[in-house]
Image (cartoon, rainbow, N blue to C red; front, side, top):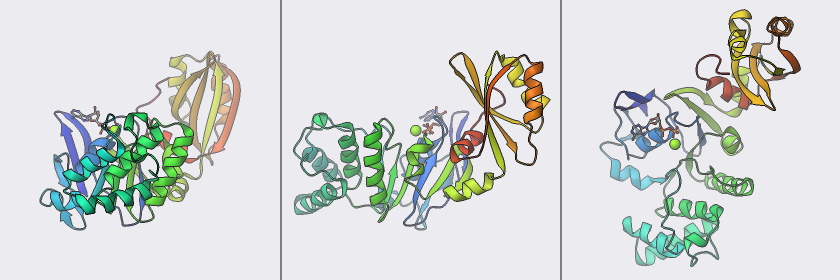
Length: 311
Ligand SMILES: Nc1ncnc2c1ncn2[C@@H]1O[C@H](COP(=O)(O)OP(=O)(O)O)[C@@H](O)[C@H]1O
Ligand SMILES: [Mg+2]
């Protein structure tokens, strides 16, 4: 895609984003709620017309070739809407019928998705009687009934319990061996182990794009400091950056009546002494200071903080 953007009235939900995905890749599309993931995915799948820019699939422009492209794409929308009073069989037959896959062709497609998505044994069950994990499999099966080469999955593991997440992850990884998969999430851990590459979107803009290793190496040399303090006022927290220029304030969260501060600094410029003095001057009590080399979670956090101190 090139320079893709979408405005909703005066809101620029997606701002001129550019990325390319190649066959055989499993790509995670990561961003906090409201970052612009769903809007982007809906433009890629042709459900939403961009305000600017274009999506290309194999050199075909989605505006001119929506029908051909939609044949190649399976799209699992956020929240996975299913007709819960239908049986799995009836639902898949209904979805196949929309794509004019009927009769013998449907039987073959059904056998294929039942195998691919592990639906043996539940085909004749009513959807409302299936567990959430199975419903997600049914959703996946419905997006794959026409055997697309590309799977676009909007938050496919959100709302599942940890066991179900592991299960659906495994399934997506398996499908990714044959298909291009682009899956979104607002939770790094949900996708980190599934994908080969992570694209991070923040306020409608791409702020990072690379493999786990690439993202890590770009941020190596940065140290993250988790500090637990008592009696820190919002005012004093928001002064850290101006008092100690080598410190970047990421965010803070309350914990048991204390504050957990997440800070970042460069390895060459260790500010811990100054931080200690600053804390004393601000009448904070330091309960702990834990420096560690940045991990992907920290990178995500530092790329998606909005504004300065929001203690
Ligand atoms: N149909 C719409 N009309 C107006 N604003 C929208 C619409 N869809 C999304 N938005 C806004 O666009 C921004 C991006 O939303 P969305 O793409 O759903 O983010 P995400 O999927 O990353 O949570 C949000 O601020 C959201 O409120
Ligand atoms: Mg969304």
